Length: 413
Image 1 (cartoon, rainbow, N blue to C red):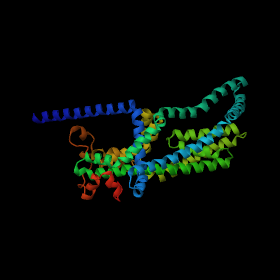
Image 2 (cartoon, rainbow, N blue to C red):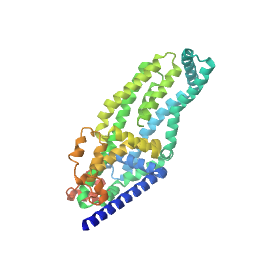
Image 3 (cartoon, rainbow, N blue to C red):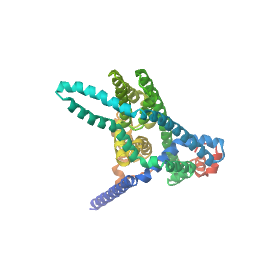
Image 4 (cartoon, rainbow, N blue to C red):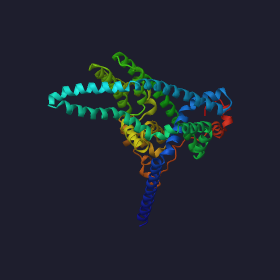
């Protein structure tokens, strides 16, 4: 009788824990969706601060003032971004001066192609022209529509760029205090593991920034060389525009290839150049997906394709293009955190890029009670970090350092 009562009590506790978890999760998701005007800039601020922290450390070694170091870091990053924007602005402005001629050329070429095909299907010239006018409007507006929609959904980020910079400034300035606050919420046994987790999360952000920059540079060079060989005008802007848009998973590559294809259709009289543009971008995309990105980013992100696609869809639902851009690096950081929480390690493996090779671990290594998620809701396990040794005195001292002491310390923080 006592055992039955105990089981009922355990079941009640489990149900209550699960209900509380679902309620809290619903509140968090609703807050992220309805409060995206607040969360998008602050998330980008955190992400930029993590990425720029190594640069800020370099300036910390040169100057005794952290404020000066942070300002120089933001100035350096802003100069690079403004330089890229200035380059594209000048090139796009030159293309827009020919917009009427480009549109007329696109319309004329498509008329010729459609009339040739229309004769085969018994369509009149008037029907073909009507269809082409509708097709041009749809095809030419689709990539621009996607871009404009993305800019509007992530308009909080773009319109409040100064707010993002302010967040980044203060996160860099108070990074020691924030780190100490996070570690202070953990027990002494968990603080070493917590410090390691924070370092790994920052490493992911830094590697993603450098990796994406290198990937975009390689793609821009490959695209530009290919378009130059094809004989397309403005090959630099088309090549590097596609590389920059590649930061938007899946969608960016399609847009980046569609724009130079339409430009080739509008400005060239031969059919082989537009076809070669398609062949070029498909080839470069294949090389990027199978060689460049796995080699450059594979070691830092370590997210399998299924998890990446799901995260991109969820990110687009909550935050639009801003969420799509952040989805993969944020998921990589979440995976790092989950690997340091014992009951959730199987979930981290479920996101990992070596899921296929390590699938047996679910019935071997993780086939234990402590790794079952249900234990979290039954009260048999906690979300404490994997037990490690207590913090050594030197690390404890580092945790308690003030900003001034950290700047004077030669060790990174």
